[in-house]
Image 1 (spheres, rainbow, N blue to C red):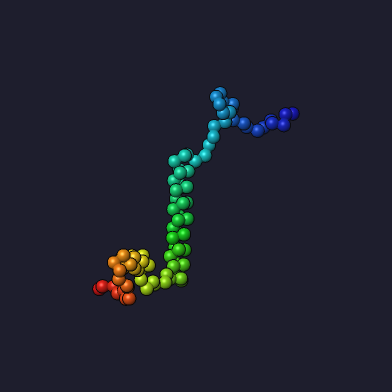
Image 2 (tube, rainbow, N blue to C red):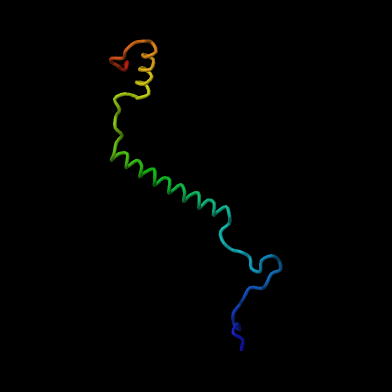
Length: 88
């Protein structure tokens, strides 16, 4: 008695593969991967939003770039900056 007796095997096919590959199509795999990436990015966006609510950014007294530009312009003009006030 043969050990394989009673078992059904697919017939051999001619060509590069003996058995065809079966599984999800390439397009459905791409859609699933895209959806997974979007879910992960949405989760990270929510986490970043919650962290920014817990630890709010400090309010700066003035923009350091503006202060440096005013000081540099005053040095070239021979003046001295004593007070910087933002116009309304």
